[in-house]
Image (cartoon, rainbow, N blue to C red; front, side):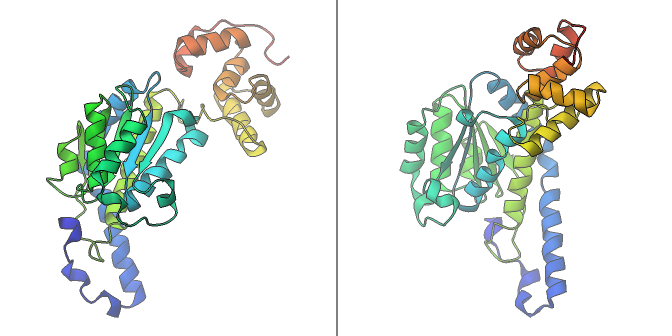
Length: 300
């Protein structure tokens, strides 16, 4: 596998001056980001298909082992505070279980049976989107989990850093990001890990945009659950409605922290009718604003 090869450039890296070495590491990281470029069309296609699958009740499920599994967790846990993605529609299937998030669980990734069992236990079905992450693309746990998820009707995506990887052959949307040999042979937390994180950032953000959780470049689906977020919500509402901060704060209060509803209220829409409009348009703020009924007194 290319990710396991020895990179001759770094054969004597421990003898290099620190600045030279960290500069070379940095160059490698930039190369990892660039390696994502050729698969952007595949990422866009996978995100569009995932958004269609997730429009109603489907879950976003990240599968992985070791570094790859933790990268999936890092991406997924941010979707709720950023986009108000429901916790119950987010799942992590990790080799070694939750314990593997904080420490290595040796040998867990070698069990194909555990991978399949975790998918079965999770009740994966045709409404779900399953993302398998594996630098090698050959991790038995991950390959088996993604393959079985596909047999159960789920949409499957495989992200690997080696050509001809089994993971890429067993999923509906293969994403090959060829990062090549690492500076430290086999240390795929570096280039391969960086490329996987870039994939996750691009993919999940595009899915959330397609699901209507972003409007005019702002996080309109975030929940104002504390004082900092309440201030941010008011700023978003003020920006989108040309209201002053005080009026925006009133709208946020009336909407009980729901930014989309607050934007509708601050734009002059009746709260109850605005909520109905958002529901009718599947949370699409742009469409709801275009069709919701108006009232005259927006700040009372």
